Amino acid sequence: MSKLVPPHGGKGLTECLLKGAELEAEKKKAQGLKKITLAPPADRIPLSYSAGRLVLPG
View 1 (cartoon, rainbow, N blue to C red):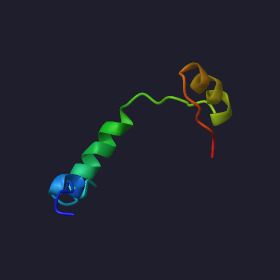
View 2 (cartoon, rainbow, N blue to C red):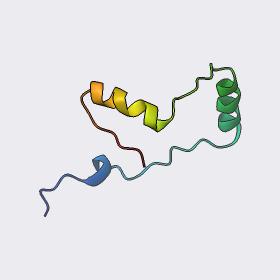
View 3 (spheres, rainbow, N blue to C red):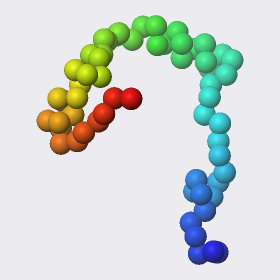
């Protein structure tokens, strides 16, 4: 068992959630980004076929 690779690179887990002022700054930045509308999953399935993979909704 000692020859196994340590999980997550051996450095433990790190919390990646923003808090406080950093979170508020990113929310403000996000408000200025261009908004796009995604097609429903049923409309995207044929695109998945053409890309060489099958992605089923659900």
